Length: 137
Image (cartoon, rainbow, N blue to C red; front, top):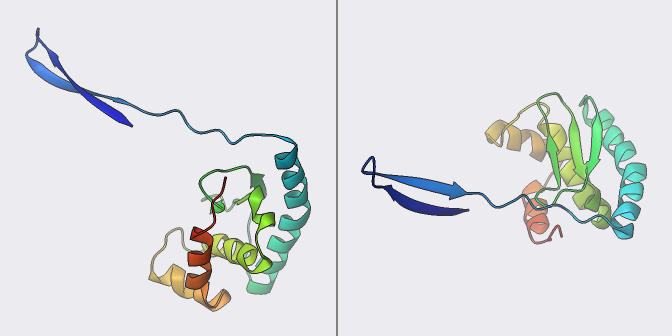
């Protein structure tokens, strides 16, 4: 984001203009489409399995080509999963899905959220640390 300060000689006031960078678009190619197909086949059944095991109920699941996150949860109880999850070890895939399922109960990262996540995914902090070391693009 770039900011520039200008002076208006008529009013005698300074004002600031902020230019936002355009959003990055994830590239779409044959490899992305292959990952998307694999993710649509593998991730929704595993999410349903984890939800059933731990007693979570969600609305819909979407597979996205995000550049900034592995998953997200909406207030409508929809779960978004990054198609690149299929490139991760199963343990990290499960961590991301359990993290998003816990957001169905707590839409924040407060102490109650982390206590719930620890109960369904022991050692979740180490898994989160491992995930931070992996680039999305």
